[in-house]
Structure formats: C-alpha cells, structure tokens
Image (cartoon, rainbow, N blue to C red; front, side, top):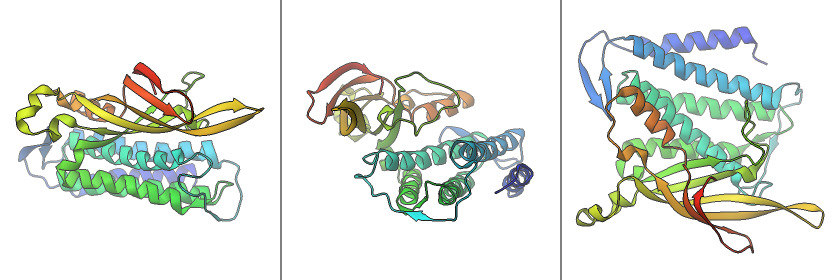
Length: 295
C-alpha cells in the first residue's frame, strides 16, 4: 500500500514534470476560448497543482471509501455489462467518470495557458493512470479487478479524446445527474444507491440542423436521452428495473463568456445535466412527466 509520504513524492514529481516541458517564450494565442502562452506563468503552476491535487485526492478518497482494511490477494471478477447487479449503471458511471476527468483536467490546463497538445496528452495520461489505479486497488479488495469496468473507463476517455480531435462529436455530449433521495452529504458515496444516478447523451440539435433552420431552434437547448434504474419494494424484496428518460437539456456553452475563470466553470458545469422537462419510462409503470426533472 502506498504511504502518505509516497503520495506526497508522487504529487511533487507531477507538479515538477508538467511545467518542465514549457519553453521560455512570450508568444500568446487563443485556444478554444482560453489564452495560451508559451512562457512559464503562475497560472500554469496553479493548473498543474490543481490537476495533480485532484488526481491524488481522488485516489486517497478511493482508498478510504473502498480499500482501507482490505488485505486480499489480487483477483479478477467478471460482472457482465448491462445485466450485472446495477443493470449497467455502474458501467456508464465508469465511462462518464473518465470522460469527466479528461475534459476537466484538459480545460484546467488550457485555462492555465498550456497548448492544445500538452493539455490533451497530460489529461489523457492522468485520466488513464487514475482508471488503472482504481481497478488495481479493487483487485486487492473484495470488489476485484474488472476488465469490463476498465474497458468502459477507457471508452469514456477515448470518446473525450475523439471529441477534441473531431469537433462534430461535440454535438453528442455525455452528462450526469445525481439526486440522492436522502439528501446530499459530504463526502458523497456515489456507489451507495445506483437508482440515484442518470447518465445522459445530450444532442446539440441547433448545430445539427441545416443552417437556414437554426434560427428556429435555440442554441442553448439540447435534446437528451438518459438511462438509469429504479429500485422499489415488491413482495418483501427490492426489485431493480431499467429506466429511460427523454427530455430537454441546457447547453451552457451556447453563451459567450470572456472571463477565463467563468469560462472554465461553464465548461465543467456543462457536463452536468441540469433540471429540465422530461418524461421517464420505467419498466411496466406508466410514463412519468416532469416539468423540471431533477434526475
């Protein structure tokens, strides 16, 4: 098990490594709304520290949430995909986690002034490192190493990378909503109840319409399809059934932002599905209509 001192060494090496590839030039440019500079700056150091801190913090949190006290030999489990214990919600969670981490790390580095290539590969590397580390930790715990989980992690990372290289794919964004029935708490334990999660594919209708038709569809309004599960009591036991939602979604990036910090926040929050009108189809239940669906 990695000690606290070893985590500190890893964090320091990470912070030193990222800025080391920066040349001491003064040219600047604009990259996806963020200002890029070739010189070493305080913002680059801050961005490196934040990315490193998020990475280390996530691993430490995972240790205390799932692995602390475990002393099992490394072992592999095969859970299935959409017919597993969570009916696939955990797999979509793995996919979205890598997708979210990659884009968040990348946007933080772009905010810090890193170039497009450096931001891409450092974000991809740190996200992949996190995904593999999580599965290795699970392999040494009662959960077990899951190739299915790792495959979905890499799928989320891969899709995020493809979106940066092929702008057309940005019209199809992954989003997530999480509404615990018992209220939010800190620190959160996202795997306690899978029926509190919904994973969405948001489609940018405005961009996909022919140019002459775009004026009829607001740029800030997407259409989204969500997937989750619903747990309910029946005959003295908990029954889990699939749930599909169709509704609207808000595209925050449709609004022009010049402030660099607000732009960063906008891009991160835009990966969350905000409350919007939706209809839900759950098993054999009647469709449920929501004016502002929270999940």
